[in-house]
Length: 457
Image 1 (tube, one colour):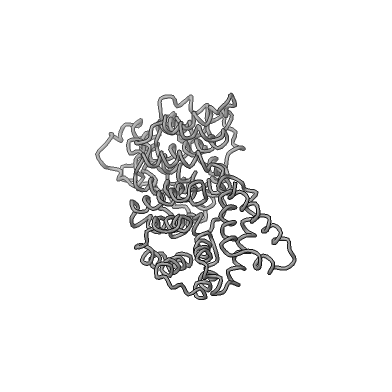
Image 2 (image 1 turned 60 degrees about the horizontal axis):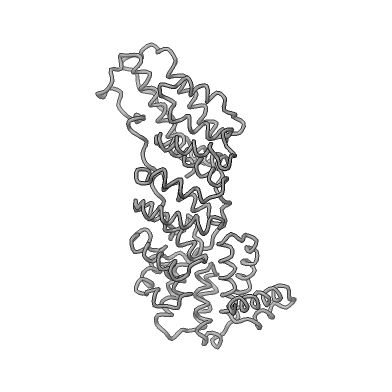
């Protein structure tokens, strides 16, 4: 009750200050630590799914920045204000404001100065310098508000070079700040690191925790990217039952989109069983609301059987798909699948000359790859609309501190023959027209994989 009353009073002052004609009113009324604490409360509401609080976050960052720029050495004699300055920096604050305020505060404590230097290095894009300064500092020995943010930053910085230590630090961040944006970011980053480490148990546990607590965070689309990549990379270690348990906690629309994305990736990577499972779940829907009319699910479920003995059924199914409801990338995929299905049932062509040069395929330009990726992303929207994140609290995939993405598994060699394979290697007798047609089909499948290499993750 006491905390709620204090929060209510602070928010009332902030609202009054935001509408007051004099900008100095807020600065004279609230101490830096009060502004920063209010900022954290707003960010925690956002992490829980209150997107309407995002404009208030922007206003609070602006007000806090102005207050810290005006703060003098006397303000920072209160240790709460100096800790607030550091937390502000790790909450997406302005690096120049932090650096200028630290110089005015002139901290006597060596550890406080080291943390400040490390945060500044982190904010301005010097990760090596940040790691060197921050590595000896144990977040668990600091006040919880500061320690949680420091554990998150250190865990992010060490994700590539020492993933095991990074996961430990992210666990500490969750322990020190449960139910907050810090925990949301720590869980999200842990998912990506678990995928890179091949740790299916941690991947499943962390994904479950994220879906339970932060599915409606504005940053959940980044979790969805890592989750889909993880399901593909760890498909041999994660059962379909476990996958269904995790997705069952999502709302029906998010569950459908997740399964569509998994089905597409699995079909392209030659994971027929996973693609069939995900496509079926996408079509199945929930609460009696099926998605059987979704052309994407129909297409992806057909891809894994395009060269099977049921080819006529597949051709019929492909022919019924509504092309107008597909993205450009998926229309290209449909065209390729129909062409290959036609090749399988077509009468064998006459054999080429023995010394004929192998056909070459012109590589797609970077512009074409980008266009296909954009079209695919438009056809398979993320679970959430991605929101640009600040460097510390909510990392974007492009920051130096972001966890490495999981590599895409290679295509199933039993299904796809590499396009670069020499024509005269040991294998099926190519004088048999049927075998020749099948080898040609497999090469075409491999070219489809190359064409769709930039598919959304």
